[in-house]
Structure formats: structure tokens, C-alpha cells
Amino acid sequence: MVIATALLAVVPGSGVPASGIADFLTTIGGDTEVKTSGSMLSDPSPQLYPLARNGSEIIGYRFFAEKLAANGSATAERAQAAFAQECTAEGGHLEPEDGKVAQSFRERVLGRRLPPRGNFKHFWSGLSAVCARSPSEVMGGFVAITFDNTELATKGDFGARLFSKISLMATRTAVYAYRPDRIPTAASFERREAELRADDAAEQKANEAFRRTLAVGTETNCGTVIQIRGPMVEIAVPPVRLTPNGQSTFWSKRTVLARPGIAPCTYGL
Image (cartoon, rainbow, N blue to C red; front, side):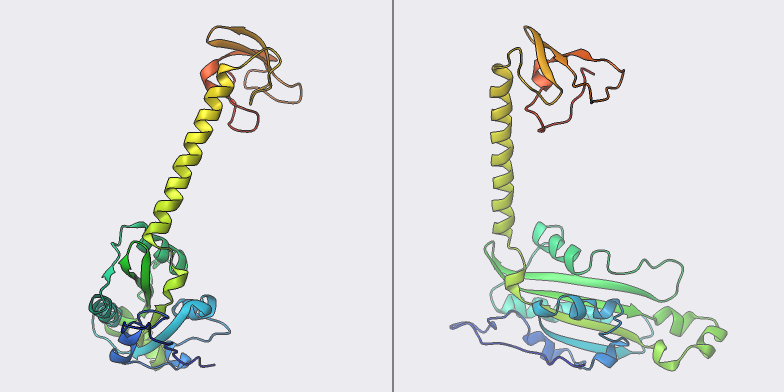
């Protein structure tokens, strides 16, 4: 099964395809034959995971099968440099690797999908990047997954090389260009963080008001208020709830009590 590379309409007044940064794929070589990846879409290896699992987000790809003597990631690094060059040429920049945009993208498209290396001479490695023009505009995503066989091909023992299929000696790299509209922007993360801060502030304000108005009979996260002495509150524990010391009542600081279901109970500890 071959899915042809698709570069959609260009945004008016810009050289950037409406679907994202992908022209770099035409400059790096490789092909679009799935068999070059050394895997099948019906039973994909990690280098085909993006195409098999994120197909609707991918706007182009290239596969490579090479016998490399060293640095199995060389093709992936070259492709990433070409992606970065196109990104810069179109007025964008690569998001910092330790930033939320790049990290969330990497976790989603690579994350735990690559098997751990272990003690094998062959292993998988991945690169990813996100191009953005501003905090509110992502221009595209880049992913490269390499099945690195350089150590097996150049350092493996004679028996391993003799009995391995010649095709398996190739280091295989899959390079993908992702649609920008499926990648969260820096602004979206900022909005989400602002919403969480507002929610936390509202929750804190509501709990403070709750604690100020505690009265005998009030239901809390620990049980029912049965006595109040200044900053201390005595709580009756529901009979169906187990407590650390088996107590049916306990004294708690007013400041640690909350509305029912909001926070775990400390039972005065």
C-alpha cells in the first residue's frame, strides 16, 4: 500500500503550503515506497507508526534504506536540518526542545512508541521538531524514526552477519511532515495554564469561604462538624469510613478541611 505525498494549496502571499512545511521532502532524497521502510502497514514496525497511527496528520514522507558505516541518525539529522532551513526561510523558527510545544509533540508522536535499546546492536531512535511563526501559529511538524543497524553491519560478529539477511543490514529511516493544525500552539498552552490558575484560585477562594462559615452540622470532606473551638473543629466520621486509628471522631484544624469530595481527609494528622 502506497500513500502518495500530498502537498496542498499554498497560503496566499506565502510560500508555505496551507497544510504545512513539507517542501523539504523533495530535497532530501528517499522514496515513498512503504517496502523501503522494511515494514508493512498491516504489521508496522516503529518506523511506520506515524503513517499507520497518525495518517490523517501526515502531509508527506520519505523512506530510506542505506548501509551506513557510522552515525545511523545521519539521514534523520540531515532531514531535520532541511526542515529547519525551510522553516526559517518561511519566517518561522523551531520551537525550543525543552518547551511545551516541542515536548508535547514529541511525546505524542514518539513517546513510548520506540522500543528500549537494551543490549541489542540494532535499535530505534527518533527526532522531532515543530516550526512556528508566532505563539499563536504553528507552521508544521517534523518526525524522523531510524532503525539503526550500523553496529550490526560494521561491528557484529561474523556469524551474526553471515546468517542475517542482507536486507536487514540496511539502516532504515522514515521522515514525516505533519500538518500544523493538529499541533497545539504556545498560545494554547498559555491559555490552558491561565485557565488552570484561575480554576485553582477559584477553588481556593471557595474553600476559604467554606472554612469561614463552618457550623455544627456542616458536611466536610472528613465528615460532619459536631463542635467548633476557634481554629479547631471536631468531626464525626461516617460509620462506613475507616480511619487510620479506628477513631469515630477527631479534632482537625479548620484550615485543612474542605467541601465534601474536594480533597482527601487527613484525619487530624
